Image 1 (cartoon, rainbow, N blue to C red):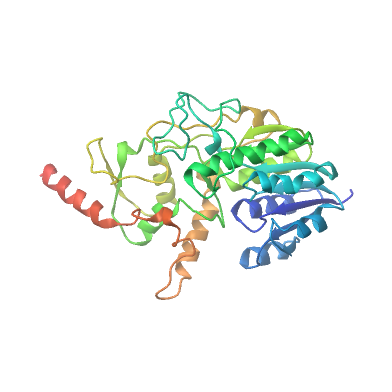
Image 2 (tube, one colour):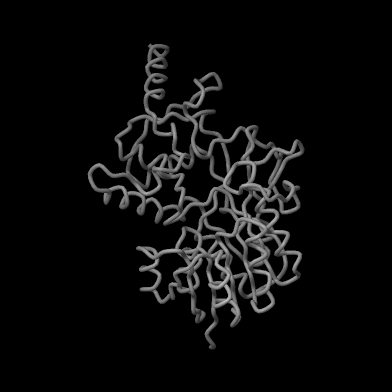
Length: 351
């Protein structure tokens, strides 16, 4: 069997490293080049498994030319954000057997034009297929709530319009070892902090589909063998509710929470979680499944990430914090004061 070559841009991130691990563990013979700006534990682990680490910026044209001009069987871009990012790849697409671009479900809009990053959240009324309308392409700041989706759509269109076999993947709420924003930390830290109660808005019924990075990896490996020009949703086997997510994580950690399920009249922000959603957001993965892909379940796929989160937390030196703590995303999510105040009021009403 001849060796095939894969290039993974952003190869040490949560998605990229999952793709690389999947290829390296497959029965096929893959040479996997992982590209990232700097090395570290993830790069060391991948090279120990047989990958080749390439230190470089994904937006450096010289780096891309050296990697892709010789051609590749598979190109996976996990970090491309903008139209300009996509334009950098266009000269090399004809020399790649199968290209995969990781986009986001944040591109989808409902009938009112609302998207996942809107102040007012979308209401889709059913499972979202790849035919769902998207935001208009744009060239604003992709790091902002309003700019992210339009930038992704612009990048998608550049790659798909080229005509080469490019698959655009649209995941939701990605989790996995090494992920930059591990939403599961919301529950893990509460367990590590010894919190006995966990407050959940709307009785924990919110649903916002989750996607395992390992599931993206298994789908990418399949796509290497069936190149085509298409868009695919990628998500877990089923969409767990907030309550199911909390119970799954707590169970893995052998931690028992007293679940306080709040009504609609609960104080603002109290009980809000990273998966809270006023209306269910579920991705239809029929198209990906039709190719033979079997998505994992959240309960099974999340375990390695939970172990990684605990190990990372325990390794933090005195006075330090976990690497993702500086992300503004976490602001207020660990402010236990309002939670304790709400619990005190609830205790009075219970008595």
